[in-house]
Amino acid sequence: MKQLVINANVFDGTHEALLEGATIIIEDELVKEITQAPVDATGYDRVIDAAGKTVIPGLTDNHFHCFETAPLAVLDQMRLDEFFIRMAKFAEEALMRGFTTVRDAGGATAGLKTCIDNGFAKGPRIFPSNGMISQTCGHGDARIFRSQKVDGTPLMQTGTFVIADGVPEVLKAAREQLFLGASQVKLMIGGGLASYYDPIWTIQYTLEEMKAAVEAASDYGTYVMAHVYTSEAMQRAAKAGIMSFEHATLLDDETARIVRDKGIWLCPCPQFGAGVPNGTRTFYPYGVSSKGKPNPQMMIDGIYHQAELIEKYDLNFVFGCDYFRHDLAAEEPRTRQIIDFKRYKELFGSFKGIKAATGNAYELSKLTTYQNPYPQGKIGVLEAGSFADLCIVEGNPVADLDILADPDAMKLVMKGGTVYRNEL
Image (cartoon, rainbow, N blue to C red; front, top):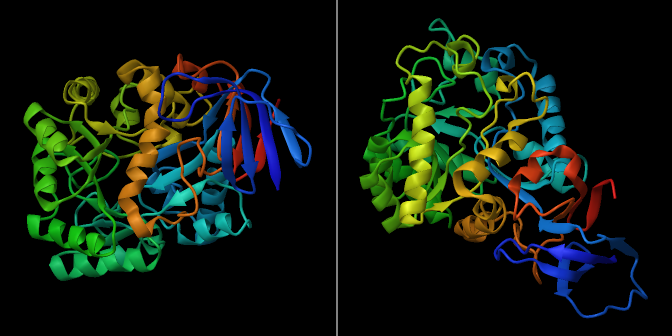
């Protein structure tokens, strides 16, 4: 199928200046050319008139959990069929908001990805991590009560979390996720907030265990991404060769220099203070005790300090949300993906904020090498050879990222040449 998008002001995902009055030539699922020269529309199957609106690459959420449709305690009460149906709906909603790609930060996504790729379900391209690998009593040990056994909890049975202790078990767990099609491996290396028994200050996994996961991933041409908040855990992870730090909220100067020197990527997920009340009940979701957890203000302050260090050391970073739909403020009925555009503008500015969800995502995807599940095209950019993944937006989000926080500004969503949303 041959298509044209005409009268477009194009953001290519990399450069701040828009290419005005451009035409995008699409053949099947790929962009063939973007030009300002006249193009004869004869022989094209569809012509889409952008009417001077901004065309941006399809967005990428680089820290996405399809399974987080409810609190852990609620998910643990679901049958597996309900669990997976809700995941499919969640993925479809993300696509309709303009997220044509997500980097799965852990979950039972193998089946969902296959159904999306085969056209049986609607959703974004998924760069899957599959099960999140955790030590016992780590951030991926999702037991809610001490009376539970790991294999007896419904949520653990989905494969969303994988418990592995010691080098041989970590190696096996990482290889199992690769067998399931992981494009990168997800490791839990520190405590968390939305968890019951792991204080945030804990360092999880020894250096040798971390190196085992890194070795398994690198032997298959890819990398490890790690859940981490504290600088102590980040420094151990850097020694192990982990290349993507998720959250990294309590980053300090020394660690920032290490991150810069090793070319490590950060995915800040700056949800703290983003319109979410800071009381204990909302900050620590649904029954999670604040014991052993930081006070909310520490995390909010950490987000701002982290942003300063990212700017100071020019660190690599991408857009990611890590959402909890159930944590959203009452006045915001949409998901955190929408709220976080405001956060990224506040912390990094509009251009760097949108680049984190587009061109930077493309650069990060290169770390997957031959484990990239979509090698036939580029994500996150609009240029010859990129996927025809694009959004047509009212206004210029490169100049004002708040525009993407307005769900009505998104007028068209195309993925792989197929239009999934059209309000032009």
